[in-house]
Image 1 (cartoon, rainbow, N blue to C red):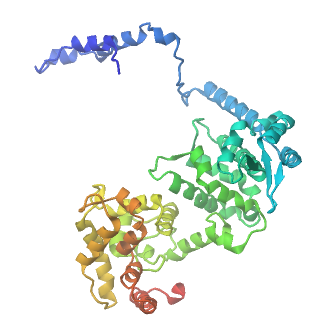
Image 2 (image 1 turned 90 degrees about the horizontal axis):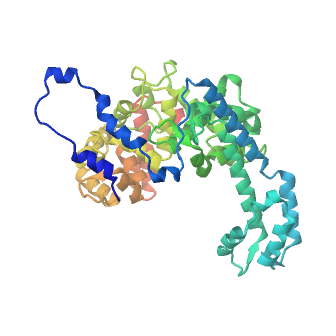
Image 3 (image 1 turned 135 degrees about the horizontal axis):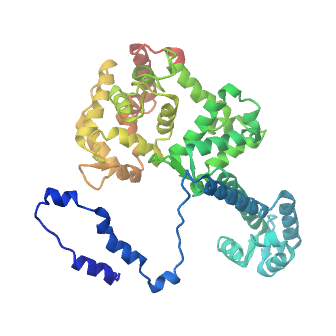
Length: 463
């Protein structure tokens, strides 16, 4: 890379002194005088200044209300213009009819195929708006994945068009809530979006109560930010929202008819949200709206170790030592999705006691103490830590034989097992007795019952 000769000259003329400046020199020091040579260079006329356009325009300051209003109005008009380019249902039906009329071949299995010559006829027949979607490049791309030389399935073309229309529509809809206009949504922006689309979600609008709506919105938004903003920057890219599939999962609730099984696996469904919220209320024994460490200990199987819970309350946001609903949602999402990189990022932060960016043998032993406490509580046979430590390092196969990094956990494919046996007793016991066959579940169930008795947990909760 060629260095600007003017800058080189400035450095050559730079005088550096090791003498301590006097009080008079410090008093007369003018920092602007140091920047003057650089400002003169920036103001200099350079041949490239006339050919290279300005590529960054800073957004107006919040105090400039006129420019802010102008920017929002321009942004809104731009999005409305983009909306007009989308195909509506009638135009999509017309496109499918034209595709069927120009079908080149029908296979014995009923698959409708089209060759390039007939595809060109379609391109000439369809409306200019549809022509933006059906291009020669699209045919070439679909041909690469087609099992029929020189031909493409009609349904592949139509599905591509439908998908692109939906993604563009989703991007435009989300962009209306991007006040800054930089392609990101803040938490408040996402909350406003969810509130506005609730009336269109047939499975939600018919049963959500006004008093519960804020909790529903909070639960929905938290999943978006947990998976798309693991570094807690406070914003998520609209592009990531569309690519993640989370928005598709949410908009499935527009369908009035859906199976009970789909409700159970959809975080955004009302039964799922009520389950999470109900668990929070059940754990809140003193009904103060917050969870203490002792109350959170009853979560799930009730066998999360005290060492792990101590670390959760050390690292996570709390209020006077107690956890609120938003923090609880992060906790639930992390434990329910331990195989996901975002959950591992959350859990690794808790496991990394010394904030070194890696786990050592001492770290593993620190968390194993919590497992040992529960082993002694149920009078189970002691487990040798050295054997467990060797098994963990064998599973992870870390680059450094003495350290385990977050990336090592993600790459090994065994992170869920490794994390679980360090933080939860019943997961640890299941792992220890994995080779016992049908013998293991009986003893696992027995020890969980003993644990519930020892920790004064109600058995109906377990059942």
